[in-house]
Each structure stands twice: as structure tokens, then as C-alpha cells.
Length: 247
Image (cartoon, rainbow, N blue to C red; front, side):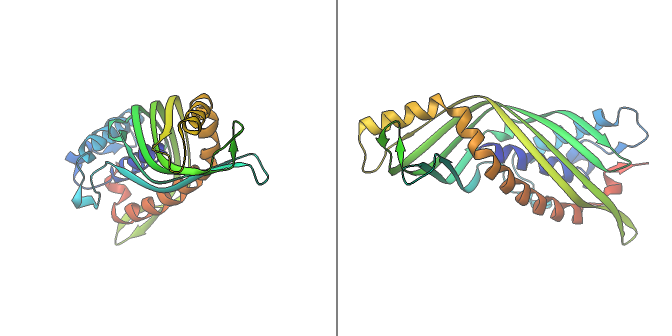
């Protein structure tokens, strides 16, 4: 969940670097530079630092918290299969993300960035139904998650077009993926429940944290790709590519 904030912050950095205010993102990069990827790495990280408090001139609000409407998981089939939904998710910590690697192909306008964040936290409203560890696990409450060692990769490709004598990029394709090294999470303040159920839920959640994240990933990646694509398209319409990459 918290990875949503990581990837949104990255996409801002990756595209908004073309803004004319070069002091914001550390300067333009030359396509003739054999170390252009190192230049882009410095520029993107400079922009991330600038965006932590928001950038009204770019239409960007303060980076934290990021709010995600809903995620859900389903384990097992049939009427007793376990189902859980997480609503009103608030994630913090992505402003401490850094881009650790950039790979670009400026001839085909393809970019891949790798990011790392030491720690991200998430809080949400939680509801579940079905049977878990032989215990009827229907109810709701509060969810918390602590994610350490967050890695993310985002790939995107654009195509150039001319408008008012300037070159812009149109987003053609976007893909993303992420992983988390260590996860601690649980539920509390369960409604219509008892200490036995809460203990069973937390035992299951922490024992199977990586598997639960794996169950969330398909839905999360689809949602992120759709939201990020719309966001990048808006940014690309405003920022000329020839202000981002020169020569």
C-alpha cells in the first residue's frame, strides 16, 4: 500500500524534470553526454528533495500523506473463504525515497528508474469476513503496517510530437513493480470481536506478510499504472521535452 506513494513521487520526479526552472531539478541533461544517466539521476533526486514541501507552480501538493481509497485481498474459495478490504489508507515515509539508478534510451524515449526507501508506514480502516485459522474472522477495525527496505522500478516510454514550435512527449507505455524486504503489520480495535480473534488475525498477518503483499500486488499495480498514466499525461502536456533533454 505504501508503495503507491513511492511510485507517485517517482513519477513526479521523472517527468517534471523538464520544467523550465532548472534550479528546481538541478539542470538540463545533454543527450551527447556519455554519462547522461548519471546526470538524470542527480536531476531527479534534486527534484524529489524540492518536492517534499509541495510545488504549487507545478500543481503538486505536499508529498505526504498519500491517501489510497481501497485495496482488497481474497484467500481461499467458497462461502468461508477469507476476504479483507483496506479503506482510507494513509501512507507516510515516501518523501525519504531516493532514486538509485537510471537507465535511459533517448533515441527511443525509454526510461527505467530504480528507487529505494528505508521505511514507509501505512494506516487504514479494515474489514474482513470468512474463516481464518479455524476462527470466524468477520468484523472490522484499524490496520497498521511498517515496511522496511522498499524497492521500486518504473519503466515508461514516450513518443515526441511538436506543438507551438516545441517538442513534447506523449506517454505511450508505463510499467511498474516493487518489493519490500521486511514487513510488520497487524489489526487492532476490532469491532464485535474478542482478544482471541484479534490474536489469531495478527498471528496470521505477520506470519504471512509477504504472501499477503503478493495478493495485493496485481490490484495495486493495475490501480497505480492507471493513476500514474493519467498523471504523467497531464505533466507531459505542460513540460517541453526539449527543456528536459538538450542537444
